[in-house]
Length: 125
Image (cartoon, rainbow, N blue to C red; front, side, top):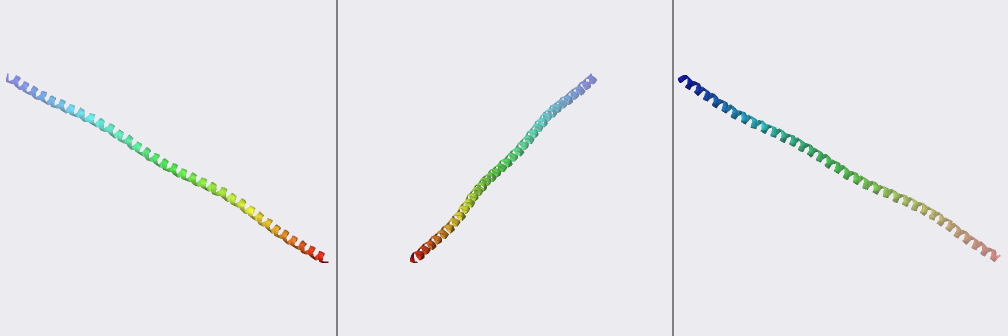
């Protein structure tokens, strides 16, 4: 009987050890689940990081678009200045033509004055 009692005691000890092992196995399973969750969180964090990078790229593209818009505005201003320069050039040409006409008019006036003087001289003779 003593032997049987010793065997039973050993079996109980083994059963307790097995129970502890099962508990540890459950804890290990929970740790693995947590590890998987952590891995998923890290993946999400990487995705978030990539999204932030894309957002930064988008911001840079918007900045470049604004710069391009400003350059286009400057180009329009430049075009307008060129158009005004052409108008000014035409005005200068017209001014030169007017100056030539005035010179011709002065010459005509002097000729008329000479003709009048000649007429006076001829009338006196």
